[in-house]
Length: 374
Ligand SMILES: *Cc1c(COP(=O)(O)O)cnc(C)c1O
Image 1 (cartoon, protein in one colour):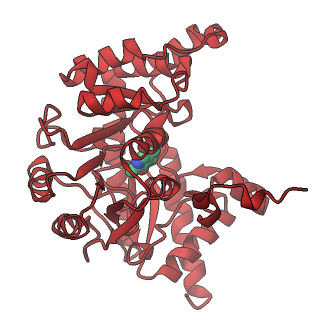
Image 2: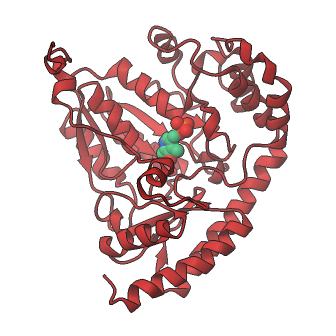
């Protein structure tokens, strides 16, 4: 038999095995535990808009058909909503898909890419998968992306591309538009920027970076997975210079976005009332989590997302909490890289889910401390 190992590309032979996230389903299979509180992946606990569900149900039989490869209706609605040209919008199977496409467009083997150490790992996965080299910049001591240090690193290593999630995952931190603009001004002229705005709907819109920003280096990514509650439908979009959008047509999967996802996203976009409800309920949930953490002597990091990171003092404590909670059917996550790994990250649940978390979490903390801590 042929040894396939030698047939893979050089790059694939060299890459370590890597999975950005182990899914709760995989953990259930490994442990035999079934998850009853799914608060680990920042999926929306409030589901899709009833209007999106109704639209998808009405079009269910159209599963027989491919989606519109140009995503025309949705792009038109997004262009109207954001007051940007139709040609500057590309739709893909979520931000994860779009990250891979942008990296494919711009990153050649050996190019250096700058990101924060412990930032969104799926981006890193795409960079290494295309032969790029990652240069990591530590978060600040108060768990924020270090904008001056990211810009300085970009200049020093002549970065091709910089990645910034704003609001950030896994910390929940946020920079206002003026701060992001100052950061952009510090970057080298030739350096592209991915602004991953997966959680932007949860941040105040009046102080945000304007979308009409006339800077061809900036690629903004957004999704229907978080505030719109449609993670399973796999649909997101980017706003970028029309040249970027046109170039994506050379490499993207034209029939990748499911027809039902297109229909659902369009209806979701039209349901502002539901979105406002999700945002308000998420804000309430964040405050509840912060109070819960404080009652236990922990600090919740300020969050502009649908999750809260709680500093529990040590990585060992965070690990114990994640494991002990999972044993009780409560799925949360912790960041993988120090110093963020001193935190646990909990998605805002429905009121009932939050009550249950507020019941179980102190019990598990108590149990760990009784057994002598960590
Ligand atoms: C959840 C998340 C994504 C993934 O978005 P999809 O549109 O579901 O692919 C991307 N970036 C960040 C920062 C996220 O937290």
